[in-house]
Image 1 (cartoon, rainbow, N blue to C red):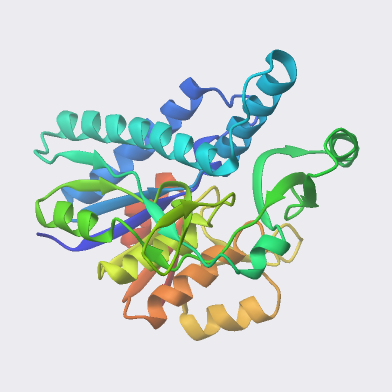
Image 2: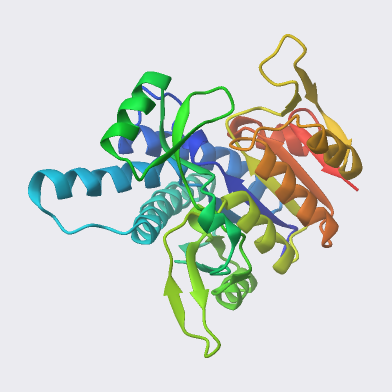
Length: 316
């Protein structure tokens, strides 16, 4: 088995243009990302793929709400929307990777694992929703939506507009971890912890119960990377690298930094809560708990970033 890499694909990076958010457009973006993942496998890496679902779970939840309002269909809890999008995105990624491996002559099976992730039922996040889901809205649109849906929480997201936010508790345990490890040892490319995992709480008897929340996929992916002892942790997002003073005339890209520098920039407030902050936190957790190196870049630059020609590499 070659070096093991966990590659976390952002849900937003699968919708490259807000004007084209269809399932077909999403699959095209996934297929393009699969080409770059195929390059890594060709170069000797064994890969485990995780993915976000922020926009997709927001769409699923909104569809369920409209179906309830217009046709009296039964409500679909948020936790089930997380499970639905985990399966749907896993299917698309699995198919795209299978096709790319077939094209390259790579004899490696791909499998998606429906993954539950344990959270603390008393996590303070349940009282302070912060995870953005769904579409971006203007200030006027957000105000109208709030009037129509008083229970919604809408916050401005890193200068990109307003989005609905939901609870995002910390991941504690990956329920299907042993199954994932068994598949890795068997030579599979595994898609797991989709959308951060389906959030569940576990009682003293070990029984699991789903809870309405969305776990941050970068933090769950970091936990996974630590638990399976990945040699490399890559976060594929909409940006080509990490920037200081993002969106200002003083914007500056970072090519290679140490963990202590990343922590310092984080403390200085350079990274937005709805965008780069959880990615930096995830990388720091991975490096602090035995990881060797991490890379943040966009899908097209995965191979270039591995060679030090693009992206942001963060090391000890």
